[in-house]
Image (cartoon, rainbow, N blue to C red; front, side, top):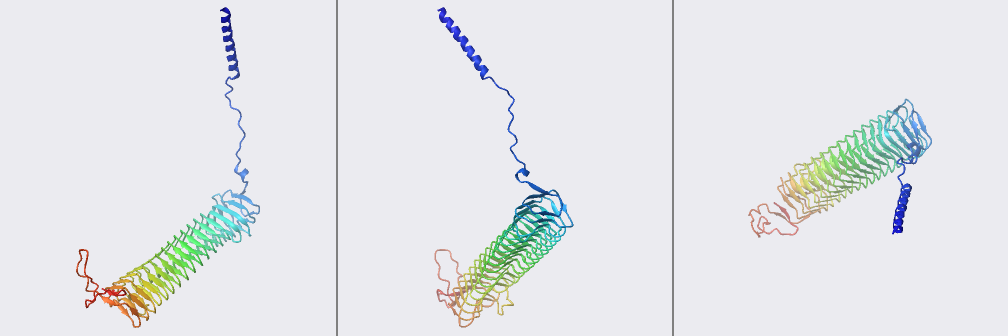
Length: 482
């Protein structure tokens, strides 16, 4: 028994000794943290060493990044770049001159970026890189310079910039250029002038002495506004596009399109010339031409005009030469002729109302169909004939299924020969509802003026399309007067 107790006591003492040892081995260490690693971040100068520019004139002939340390002015030259691969940060400061150009890229260099500052008062251009490639100016204000505000060459980009009160053009750029989110105002030349295949978007051109925007062949002008310019609002040459843009209160035409161009979803308002002047084979879709001092649209041959409005223009709504297609458009309240289309033109499903001259006039081999011509109020002094809702002066035009109401003179007047007149309805003309010269073909003209007096309240009624003798007027090609 004593031996057993001795063993228990020994075991307990041994366990306490082990625990004491463990406590010593795994006890809490120092609360003071070890020293951390050294700095891992590099400064901006370590990443991209930048060279300060502290005085003018200054020449850059080594690629790299440069920056202004403050506003700089001089009576001499500005900054000249004679190398590729340059980044020039104006730092929000002003380069004020000075003889020559504020910033000049002197040669066929490339990949140059200039940004964030103001270039003012230079005797030549604010920024000039006409022979360089892929030069970008961003957030630059070019003001009161002696020639152009900013001038770039091939594949240049001008972004978020402003050019005003320069003695030449505001912005000039070469082929394949991009101008975006920029403003040109009060320049003595044009506002924006480009080479071919350029894109101008979200820009404003106002109060310039020339055209607001003049874009070269194949260029696109999108979501831009031209107002108060002494020339045209927006001009795009061969195969150009104008979209979602506005031209208003310009001295000449609102828009100009040369051959094979497109204008869509745009507005021309209150311009001193035509709302738009077009040359050959253009497409006009979803546009509005309102209160311009000449025609809403004046164009050459082969125009396609769809779903557009021509309202309140001084000389008339639409005047085009041969082979035009005019469809689904509103031509209203113009002070001259509504639609004047020459040889081979088609006019369909238009609402032509309240025009002071002829409503629709065609000259040979055309189609005038499914139109609503209403309230033609006067005569056209240039027409050489009496006025009418619809006038056909040439040969072989089809006039079909039009509805003509309340013309001051004639409803439909056909002055040429060999025309085809069917299924029209004409009412309340000041002179005659129909005046058709000899040698034409037409369906019977049935006068139903006195018919249709019996009210209807039910599911059937007698035929009221009877002529004056009481004969039925159900000829499939019949024209009606009522």
